[in-house]
Image 1 (tube, rainbow, N blue to C red):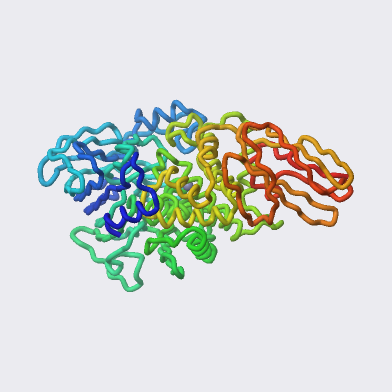
Image 2: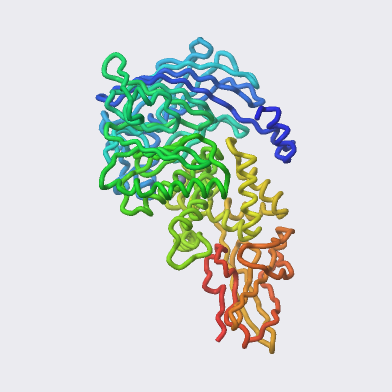
Length: 614
Ligand SMILES: [Zn+2]
């Protein structure tokens, strides 16, 4: 779709607001020639970057990320790990002491920029560790394109966090966030987040990458390999084409992605399988007893792509690669780097489903992960729970796949160290608090919306969100716009409570009064987040009777839910602490009653939500 059409499309759907101006996104096109010296763990790079400024602003400077400059003793990443001690990311410290503080000089990483030119003219630049500021010779005016050329060399760090060499499973090179990458510019300004360990953000880009490396190496990457017959691993009839010394050149291409990642190892095996209406999937890993579950995972991963296509939206990229590498699991364009050795099939599939899920919630829906990590991690976790519940159904059939996440959240809240999800990803004081704010609260954000508006409505909201925002950079405001429009409900109060605060939901059945064939019930709001209430009665003859007590703030009530039909009672104003109502069932007819039989409500003390009558 061209820009004019996008504007018409956005106007029709009301996304263009007077306040914010029309939506736009920047675009980059990288061509790179990379020459790897595997013996010395270095490479040299040449980059031509065509950058299109679609913003209504004139740009006088541009910024680049130089992530590998973080992997040094004394770097900001080192300082951050030192400051956080045992509360920090466990991969960045040992016993509370930053791993980087003691890194030998020959294991440090670096990206050294030799020069950068704009349309052939040398530019001034200054490097502030992981951010390079480039002062432009000619400002980039709105709706224009400029060309940068650049030459640099890089030292591949020992693998400590995500990128680097010699990971603990013996993968030689994990090449992620490995090239000078232009920062994102949007309505919020330049996304110049110093790299201290967490998430990323970038404009969409096309990539043409030539990687020259020792002929013995096999490369796994997120992209399309253009010359499989000239390199090792991808084509049974390949004749490895060696140019000059002993190196082969791999030619990769990819379109409309946030970044290009690759890994290289001499002992990789490459396998692939097609998915009907989905991407061609590549597995690039070291085949051994420890990675035996990769073979078994294939039918599960096929099902995973099909479930995501059906429940959220069709995957847009031609292929997707699961690559053994890195230090856990991290998502990149058309690929993920994951540790390959797994104790169980479910463990491996769970990791693949999470990281593969990011292909939707991070690549295609390119949230700003640094500013709103709860969107990409939370939404990914939400679908991970749904998919895993279908791939590995629990022994006792559980109607809602989120029980585990809800219980984790409840236990965590009791520790008293929760931090609001609205905080920037890199600025949490505690690694566990970050994980809960991001993965768990983000997932439960959608679970609570499903409870408030009904699952059918939420499902429609998610699909519409995908259709309107795929291959763009949606914010939570954009999501809420669609959620409110499609449900007809006012939901901003919920977004505020759930994301901006650590307030909690806590309702209770306070009192029952039986009188003949009726029972009068008093509910109490003991918490600080108001919610609508689903209330049910289980009768002695095993019937479930459902009631809905709407919260006045939504102003429109949910019409249906997959957990059964219900009768709608008078609304409950959020300012009112108690709510009393009468049902036409006497003591002798009731077996049990209570709040939220579906167990979706993130009530921190659910034990006082139910009463069994004897
Ligand atoms: Zn994730």
